[in-house]
Image (cartoon, rainbow, N blue to C red; front, side, top):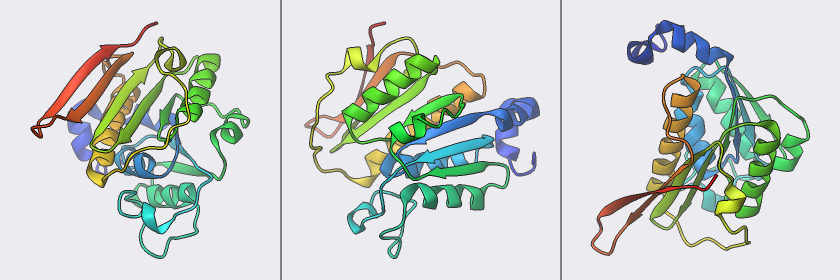
Length: 222
């Protein structure tokens, strides 16, 4: 196993790498963010990853949801991502759940961390409520157009900081999806590896009118 994870072992040692085998996470949503998260975390050595999504692949998903290819239309997204994870990494058990978040939550599966890869505020509100009930941290991420947001939520409450509404998102391109997912993955992996993580800090990334990438930080209320 250590040969497979050689470069990570150089980063944090064999003990930390071995400890990742005992960690379990749930990625809620297996589309744009979820696919990128599955690639970023699926071969990191996390012992168990639950991929959750009731949705099926559509043609318009494929350009920004990196797990899918033409011919996958009609297949469940969570199942495809779980298969790819196990194909890439023999040290990770990937479990697909063909259901929405409420369906997964009803299974009462114990995890160390939840990662939000959904595309709507009401479901994120449900994740927040569940995480508070279970005393679990979770990583929020959202993308729209050329901007995105990321936050490791621990003591703060998403529902208090954001107005939960139904909203039709603007258009989106693949690179910002992958970028935000990579930031989520970095926060998740640092936490699971026992490294420091700035919690309850919202990072907002966007391009201004001159095309400059701007990053702003906001402390969420507790």
